[in-house]
Amino acid sequence: MFLITLSTDNDNADSDKIERLYHKYYRLMYYVANKILQDNYLAEDAVQTAFLKLIPNLHKIEDINSHKTKAFVVIVVENVAKRMYTKRRKINTMALEELEYQISDNSNELEALISDLDLESIVEHMKKLHKNDSEILLLRYVHEMTSKEIAQLLDVKDAVVRKRLERARNRLAVLLEGSGYCEEK
Image (cartoon, rainbow, N blue to C red; front, side, top):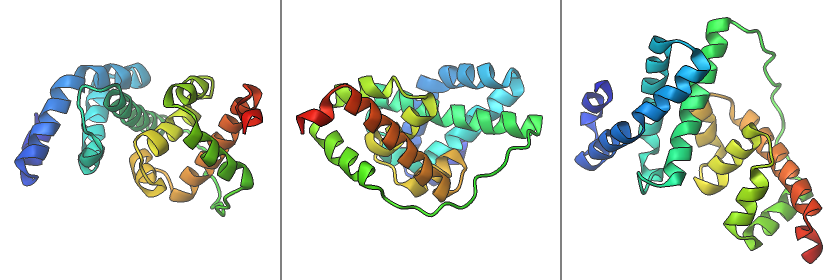
């Protein structure tokens, strides 16, 4: 209950929300982290770190029992665990270069297309994407997070998030075009 005592600086509503999140999702978060890390103690650390990352984003969580919140919590703990795994294994990965963000015509068309589709259609198409692509799109469009907020949550640079979003939008556009949504427009 380290987090609950840590949250006493926040108001009572936030403290209550953290406690309810903890009780509702702790076991799921621990399972996800342990599956990645294969270490009980590191999984505990990952869950605690994930909760620390959730605290500044409590205002984004409306209904604790919703699938949206569950997906959000799982995405956060997965990314924390993956980051810990990478650091633990000391895998040398080449960092992405700073990329200049340019909004392509494709992404503008996709934005317009997405606004016309119902959420169920988009989610069905997102399931066909790679997990990283669907996660970044969920954080951006379902949880309405900015690229800066996503960068802090995933512990990467803002430019990396913007590039991942651009690529994920392009991949989603290809799927949507293939299913006939773009011909309708």
